[in-house]
Length: 113
Image 1: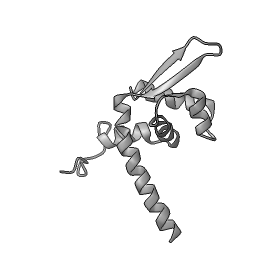
Image 2: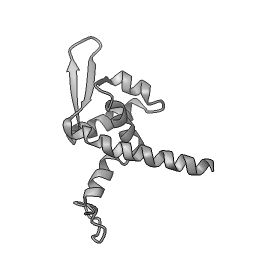
Image 3: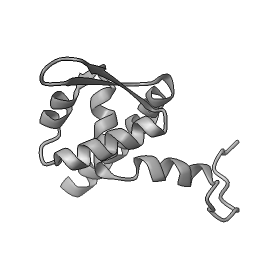
Image 4: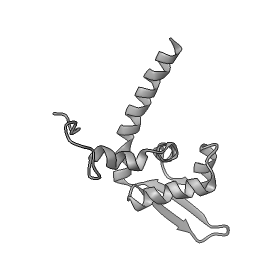
């Protein structure tokens, strides 16, 4: 059975829209990809995502934290250290990103032909 309600208008409570609103930006998806390998410090995520501004990274992490997809742990060090980790719910996005990678590889192959 197809879980996508194709014959219904995509309103605010549409499951595809809800997911797209969260992972729809390039940076959010890439932050999740980085956290799929495990707990990371803010600086590790920033280094892995060449081109992301500190303001954008902070905004994406806050969005993911507000949606309970990421947990943030702050350590009382000087300078302050923070670590981010996917929650159990956030880890469920691994399947979504895996399918995106498969699709992206198929598109790359088509572009090379």
